Image: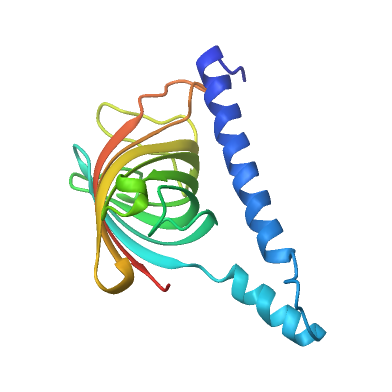
Length: 206
């Protein structure tokens, strides 16, 4: 198995961003606060730090496939609901359902994903509008197949660009539109890729 030049760059970028985000998240969760008291209190605070800052549902449509997604997100740097620049990590599970007997031998497949996302808000973070983009790793329960497209790997990269709007008390809710692409970056061929349009709703706990 060989990795082409663009595939190598994409794989390295995705791995590097995922690793950096996870290390930052781990450091934030593991570092005890300055006024840490007893061990049980420290453990309780560590568990609280590992709790997600929000959950989301997402519905997507491609040419012959629709998808439903549920996931959670963790702030890594900055507050993605209120600051100009922020970084968060999302973990999700999706179900792809074919409208014509695909996308696998059983007509459905399950996808798990871990994606760091960089977000920007206008007006120094005061605007309810935001734009964001991310690239991360995904794996599916079986190989995607359709009449004209055949994926050669269950592991693929997922990247997206999106625009959204925050609303509600303390901007706790978000609605967004995303253009999302999945492919293996040239790790193995054929590599036709798959494009989705996604509608997303997020609720934050903070």
